Amino acid sequence: MKRNYIRPGVILLAILLLLPFQVYAAGAKATVETQINKILTTMKQPGFKDQSQDAQIDEIRKIINEVFDYQELSKRTLGRDWRKFTPEQQTEFIDLFSQVLENVYADRILAYTHEQIDFGKETELKKGRVEVESYIITLDNKKVPLFYRMTQKGDQWRVYDVVIEGVSMIKNYRGEFRDMLSKKKPEDLLQTLREKTKQKPAS
Amino acid sequence: MKKLWAATVISAFFLIVGVFNPSFAMDRELGVYLLAQQSQEKSAEADKDVDEDDEYDDEYDDEVVKINDPLIRLNRDFYLLNDGLYVVFFKPAAKVYNKIIPDEIRLSVKNFFYNLRFPIRFVNCLLQAKGTKAMEEFATFFLNTTVGFVGIQTPAAYYESLPPSPEDLGQTLAVWGLGNGFFIMYPILGPSTLRDSADFIDSYFLDPVNWLRYQRFGGYSWRTTVAITAYDKFNKLSFQIGDIDALKEAAFDPYIAVRDAYIEHRNKLIAE
Image 1 (cartoon, one colour):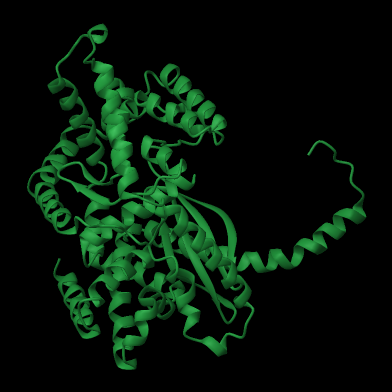
Image 2 (image 1 turned 180 degrees about the vertical axis):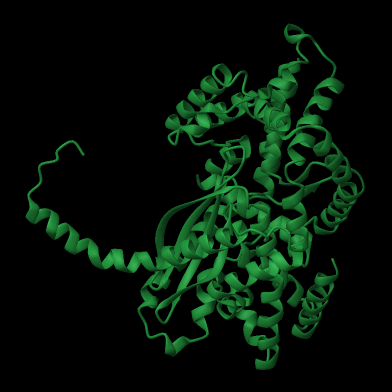
């Protein structure tokens, strides 16, 4: 801005015009930022590193659960296949799938502890759905884009997808699940999930 | 004679891509997708309760990545082979390597090779008529080569206006309208597609490592260049062990996960 001389009335008008968007926009991004910062402070706490890997993941998992909308996430992952599941199977799917994701995500977050995280802009994808940009600055100064897709539930913003370097998590799982469900029944998919979650604590 | 041979190879390549890709499927799919997007936006205003099922169906369903994979059985075998090699040899070797060689040196090696391959990025920027990007690439190369000491340091990374742009011939062809053709899992080299295999042409002509074969640059044998390239790849791999393991851990069917992720990641690079 080269010209600083703008009449106050115009500024006021501009502020008034921007205000509703600001309030709207703050929600999702603020949610992500608070949550990430919460994770970072948790990890910086004295004694955190002394815990076992499982205990560390457990603590991070609790924070993640506050923002992840696993029901939405599961529905979107299965897409039209969701209807092939009975309500009981759906509940079990959400439960098992969330366990898988928690572990994956918590493990990655732990791996990136020493790296810096920047927040980018927030774009509206559709009504009530936004994408919040964040970037992991790696040690060799590379920016790894990590986008959170969020939806509004009541007055809260919840994450339903994470997009890393352009690769959407739920789209990726959808590819796998659809491939599986084209040959097998929902029950078989659940069985695979059960095995996957069972083997986890042992490792 | 040599030139004639090279020209034949290139035209044969385009011919093959053209044959397997009669109507430039990617563009058509994109068109359909855009149309679907538009109609969705219109219907988004409609009452949610009416079509509750579609609430979770809409955003991605028309976006399901259709991947042409006629060689899936062979590809799966090669994936198993690659994964086996990774588990038995590359991962343990990289772990030892990581212990012995300090991070700074590994990083310097990685940066050096990235900087060295500047011709590939630069030429492909030009082929895609991305003038600004080409200039940025040149500025990055200049800065990193001089101030960054032949590229082992990356002073250009401190400039927001100089983002890295990994352009290659596969992306150029995509910008020109070529579709992926079909997915290929190469033994050892990993995932690619018919179109992205054009990167072999890139490395043949534009990779300075390959220039070592010319008399002017010493006339080294192909073994030397392959060894150097292999070392570069291995050094790169030494940074990715955690990520690879996480991907495998997260996946139910690692082959499908790798394949879809590859295509999606490439689409993102092409769009940039």
